[in-house]
Image (cartoon, rainbow, N blue to C red):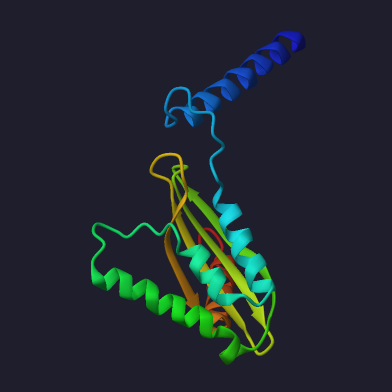
Length: 171
């Protein structure tokens, strides 16, 4: 009986792996073998440039393939220009870049990703939030934001989580 159960589990695992591979390849045109650039590669390249204190190059690389929503109107371009200017000015305000750590990553339907990092500067931590979208074969930066009020934000998240964990079922 145990052998039958083990064999059934193996068959299910193999079928699941095949189904995942087929799903992954559905969006790829026939005959296209090119490796899709992962959004982690974009983020890693961005932080490597920050490590070298090359903020302008990091911003240019990050916004090189920006997907401007709906239409490339001037308001969207000015938004990204403003974010780029804020990014380039970070060392002047917060000091030298020291380190970064991923705080949160959520993938929605395999096509949209939210990734938040705590970025440590000499004077204070800052939160960087990335959003990537993959309509076909390529991950594209969909949004990027910088939040210097991370201490208050994290404090409220922690307090909210503590409050929720203090509530017991049936009370």
